[in-house]
Amino acid sequence: MTCSSFSLFLAAALLIAAVPGPGILYVAARTLAGGRAAGMASTFGTAFGGLVHVVAGSVGISALLLASAQLFTAVKLAGALYLIWIGWQSFRSTSSPKKMPETAPDARRAFRQGILVEALNPKTAAFFLAFIPQFIDPTSMHPGEQFVLLGSISVALNTLADATVVIMASTVRRNLTQRPGLLRRLHQGSGLFMMGLGVSLALARRPAAS
Image 1: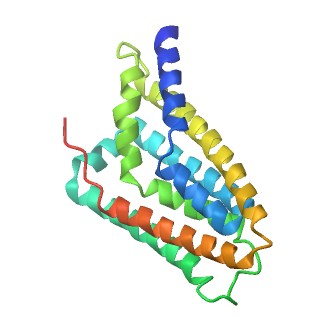
Image 2 (image 1 turned 180 degrees about the horizontal axis):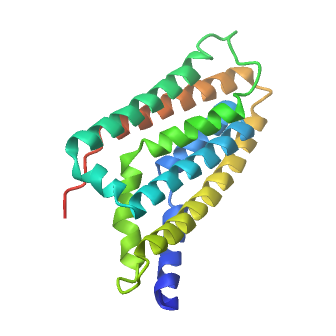
């Protein structure tokens, strides 16, 4: 890969990372609902899930996923239902004015949920397969290694953007700790938002074959 093509990739990846997308919105909602620890754990979980797609894309598994309408639908519905379930749990935990969680969600659980949310999102697979190959040197003997390298850089940049959003969202949440009523509504709103992300994923269409 030439320096010019790598520079172009880096600029494009930075721009994509800076644009708010479902990943950023998900970790923001998790942070507003559970605090900074839950948000950071979710951020690293989605990063791990993103790396799953990078590896899958490098060995051709993602291409098989996108080529099969049935498999694409099965994976996206599993991811959508999981997101909706997480959002419902968050909403239900504060359904009563006296029912606010006394402790923040377990970070390990938030990490695992982040992995599954991202790994079960076939739209991520479609993104990597559409974006990364544009910058791979076709004359190279190791295109798979190039895919993994560029994909890992993209995931790292997205993770940095997500972590920045987590810090900002946790500051907002901390400022509301003295207003339990508003904090409860914020917690419920975060749950509803995650459910909305699940519905959006369920309605996603499989990319047209090129």
